[in-house]
Amino acid sequence: MTTTTDMATAGRAPELYDPLHDTRLEEVYQTYAVLRRDAPVYYSERRQVWCLSRHADVQAAARDWETFSSIPGTDLDTPNLYGPGNFLDDDPPRHDSLRNIVRPFFIPKAIDRLGPEIAGRVEAIIAELREKPTVDLAADFALRLPTWVISRLLGAHEDDDALVQRLVLEIESHEPGETEVSDRALTAVRDLRSYLSDLLAHKARHPDDRVMSHLAACVSTHELSKDQAIGMAGVLFGGGTETTYALIGNILNLLAEHPSALEALRSEGAALAIDSVIEEALRFEAPVQYVARTARQPAIFHEVTIPRGGRVILLWAAANRDPARWDRPDEFDIRRERSRHVSFGEGIHFCVGAPLARLETRIALPAFLRAFSEYEISAKRRRNHHLVRGWDRLEARLVRSAR
Ligand code: HEM
Image (cartoon, rainbow, N blue to C red; front, side):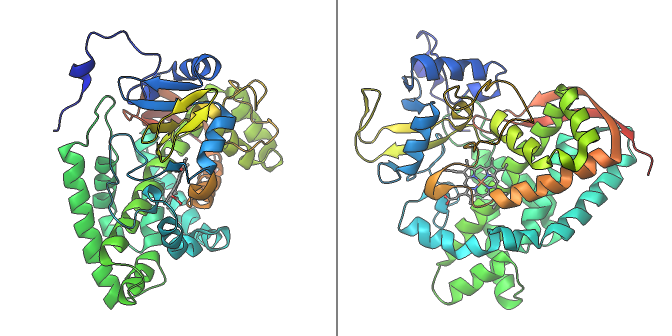
C-alpha cells in the first residue's frame, strides 16, 4: 500500500471539513451547512483543495469546463485510473467525441428497451430474498442489480459477473484519509483491463448488439485505439455499479427511516409517482457527494481567487441542500415540488448513465415493496468511501406479502 500524508499534517488544528474523510460521517450535512454559510470557497490546507458548496457556485463551475478542467482526473486521490478513453476524466474536444461513441446506447429510448430484461432479473433476485428470513439489502439486493445490468448492456458473459463486480469494487474502494491509490486498486485495474482486452477481442470475432461489440468495431475502423476502448469500457463498468448500488440502498434506508413516506408510497401507489421518491432521495443523499476539477485559469468566487492549477471540488451533496434553492432542504419530503438536483452533475459531464440508474430503480423499488409488506433494518454500516455515500450493510427482516 502506498502511504497517506496524514503524518505530515499531524499536530495542526482540526479543519472544518476534510473531503477525504468526512463523507461517511452522520454530521456531514451540518458541516456542509457551515461551509455554505461561512466559507463558500473553503480551502482545505490539509488536502490542498478548494471546496465549493453553494448551489449557484457549484452549478456555475460545473458548466464552465473551460476554466474547470477534468484532467488529470475527477477524483482527489487518483489520476484517471481507467486510462485513455475514460471521458469522465477528459475535456472537449476529446471528451465529446468519446462520449458520442457510446451515447446512443444510453439515451432513454435505448435504455427503456432493457426494461423487460431488468424486470426479469429483479424478480429472480426477489424470489431468492423471499426464501430468507433475514437478508443484507446492500449486498443481496442493491449491489446485485446494477452489476448485472451494466454487464448485460456491455455484453459481458453472466459467468464473469462476480469477477467484474469484485474488480470494480476494489478499483473504486477509496478508504477515507488515503491520499494515494492502494496497491490493491492498482492490481484490480490491471486485471480489469486484461479482462476487457480479452472481451474486446472476443466481440471482434463474435459481434452482437451490445456496447463492447460497438467498441470493437470502432477499434477496427481506427475511430478508437484499443487502449481507449478498454478505458471507456472501464469507466462504464465503474460508473454503472458503485453509484446505483448506493442509490438503491439509500432509498431503502430512507424509507425505513421515514415510515410515513413508506406508508404513503404503499397506499397511494402510482398516484404518488415513484419518480418523486427517487428524485428526492437523490437530492437528499447524493450518492456521489462531490467531484474534482483543476482550475485552468484563476477563478473568483465571493472575492476569493482560486489560483491557476488549484484543485477544486464541486460538492453536489451540499448544493442539493442549499436553502437558497430549496425550502426545508434538510427534510426528506417525497411530496416536494420537483426541482432539479445536481446529483447527476451538470453541464457537459452530466451523467450519461442517469436514464439507466433511474430505470433500474424505478423497476426495483416497486417490485421490492410488492414482494414484502414490511421490512425492518436491524443493523447497518456506511460505505467506507471518501466520496460515495451509501451503505455496504443493511441487515433486514422481511415480511413476505401474500402473492
Ligand atoms: C445513481 C446513480 C448515479 C449517480 C449518482 C451518478 C453520478 C454521476 C455524476 C455526478 C457525474 C458527473 C461527473 C463529473 O461532473 O465529473 C456522472 C458522470 C458519469 N456517469 Fe454517472 N452516476 C450514476 C449512474 C451511472 C450509471 C448507471 C452509469 C453507467 C454507464 C454511469 C456512468 C457515468 C459516466 C460514464 C459519466 C461521465 C460522463 C461524462 O463525463 O460525459 N453513471 N455520474
